[in-house]
Image 1 (tube, rainbow, N blue to C red):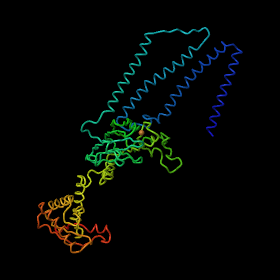
Image 2 (cartoon, protein in one colour):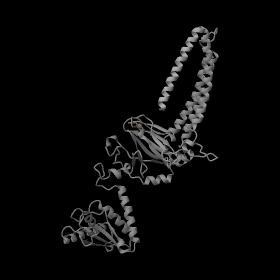
Image 3 (tube, rainbow, N blue to C red):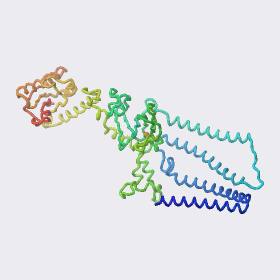
Image 4 (tube, rainbow, N blue to C red):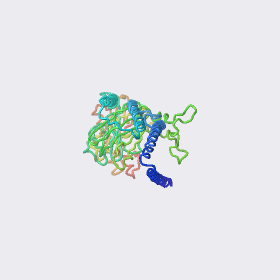
Length: 510
Ligand SMILES: [Cu+2]
């Protein structure tokens, strides 16, 4: 309806203008051409002065009115350390161009008023004026020098890379139609290498899992997954693209850099305001308790009276600032700046991409082998379990299952990977010289009980021999085979049978 009325208004205004034109034409004919021209000139001159006043006042008033909505003004302080320098440069440019803007417009309209067409007035034929040429070349040159030098200075400061050994976090952003894949370095603090030929549907970044640094890298590409960053820490973002030109843009941090296929770029910045602090700035109140920026106190969902206010719901956002295709808008990601402690806690809760998605699959180059991290993790787990067993008072709690000690099917030959767990056991006995243990073998109920007993006995003995070979004293160990006599699971199910086939040790004395 509003649209229809607007169209009708425009049509009517058009008709009015046409009619006025016709009337003026008729009047001209009646009064004579020259007089009519004189009068038109007078009116045009007056109108141009009026336009000048309204135009300049309009520019200033709208700039002041909308300033709080613009980056760099009102609550929109830069949220990164380099941001203030960039904002200063923008303001400096605005200052100079603003002066030129006002002066040239005053002259433009003043001249068209002052030198309006009049009877008997002749235009001056003006060919050249050296003084004037010098003035209007020199002034812009000086001003431009200031701006360009200042700009270069700011550019060098903003684009400075991290120094060697400088404390920083390196993350990676890869633009793909139409999402950002973020990669964090994991506990080792370093991103692993990647190579485009490694790209598969699962490994969309082409990470090289032969590079140890890749193994703990965390990958996040879901549009709803929040990107957390710690306050006050230098962040270096590697920016790449897998298909077309994208642009890594975080307006509140004054961060913006092209993501170019085949040409890695980077940006270094230090977040200086947490999301919470930025929200406080947006929601700030005047002395009389009224909101300073009322638009931020509106409901974030106008249809839901229980929804949060807009400032309470604020998040920084990463956008793609390059029109990269029709799904361009969906590259938005939310960024949350938190304290260093909170960030570390969040990071610790993230799963490594390799461990959660690649480990054990056909794409895993370490399939069938044990990784350093896994060896270390198992050792930590083992130590926690034995410490609990040492502290326990019940005899049943002093029995520890050796989950990673396995044998070749039907034989008492230890598998290669069993040695890691047995090394943990050996280290434990070394550290606790008063401990004596009983190593026991158990089987499920499949097959003949007697041969099961023999098998369990020789398996316990194999563990015993392994420890003996390593240098454990024989009088601190016994090896017993229990066969099928001590099941812990249901032999009727495959799962239960698996639980029953096991090797254990019991702490006898400590
Ligand atoms: Cu894009």
